[in-house]
Length: 112
Image (cartoon, rainbow, N blue to C red; front, side, top):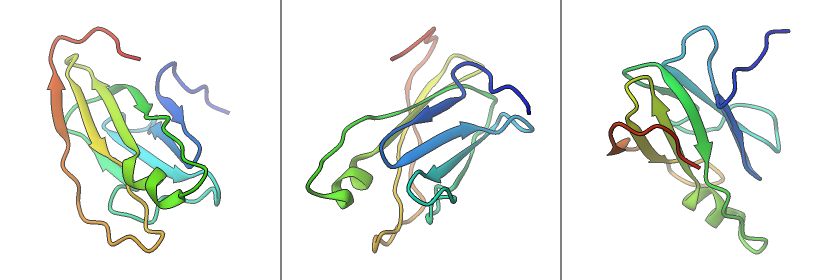
């Protein structure tokens, strides 16, 4: 088994985000209930530069799984210390489209 580098894995109630060890410009997203890839355009996120750290938002609602997925966010820090954020969606009856990745910071050393 290959070791997962620190910061390259994040898990929430319904989603797991993992930086691909073979190409660190790729973030793979999985459904924690099924173990399979997310059924959306976000199952594989290709970034322009190598990704160092990924974090998933931890918001959780017991009453509505749709709201959990609709509001889930993925933030990541790349090798240039630029911070990005994007929504994470899955298709539990949701018609998902390609989402926008927004840069929200530069020269970022760390985030929580």
